[in-house]
Amino acid sequence: MQLIRRIRELVTGVKGKGSSHFGGSNILSATAEACGTTYRSPRLLLGAIRQFHAFDSVADLGCGRATFLREAKALGAGRVMGYDLAEIDIDERFIDASEFTEVDLGSPQDFGARYDLVISVEVAEHLHEAHSETYMDNLCSLGDVILFSAATPYQGGMHHVNERWVEYWHEKFTRRGFECFDCLRPQFWNDPRIAWYYRQNCMIYARGDRAAAIRDAGLPAWGAVSLVHPEMLIKSVHLTGPAAGATLASDVAAYYRHVWGEKSRDA
Image 1 (cartoon, rainbow, N blue to C red):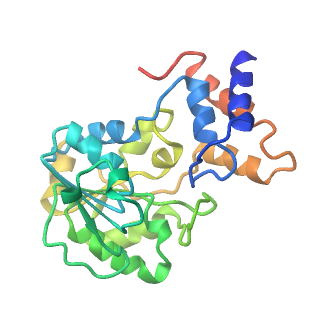
Image 2: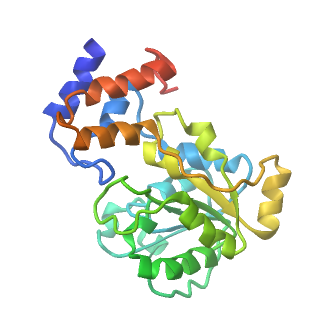
Image 3: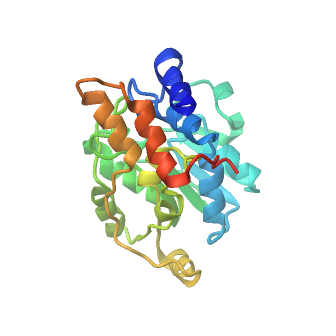
């Protein structure tokens, strides 16, 4: 009961800047409290990728604050570049000014560079469908191995104007010669150190020799399948139910108690 009470106090009693992915219910904080974890999404995801695909150069299309690029550098990447709109000051990004290029993701771009690993996570849903093909052309021009995720229908968020099921994006990748390696979701599905929307949506796309090398590393290519993470289900129920948020804390805690028991996952 003490665990449940701590989560409920956090969710209902603490005001702060929330994520665009969960509206008024701070399920990320509730999960962190329930499992005794801290947020490590970029480090864990990139570390897992490095096990089967070495990278020295990394680009992030729609980099935001560039947390993934910061972790790529910490893991040894010698060249990084973030591409995004200049909506925040460079001081708010975790990269140097020389490592950022202002671009309109929905307009055709000639980047003049290619990278060992390209990242674009939870970005595509922010562009109107009319720009989706141009966005995909831009993304795929940057390299042959891509860490990709995009919000699914009903995921919710600020300026989510093109939420689509995984299969929608998969078709666009396959038309451009990419294969899907759905190796991250099974590995991290129940790992609360990674935000639930990455666990639900992140996949690797690769083509050509890079795809062959990943297969040689023992990872089979699969067709992409849409999945709904339990945290998204819990969030959605509590945003629409008659007693919105009333049992959010206990529902999150119950799920992870079944997964991990009372132990911390922050190891």
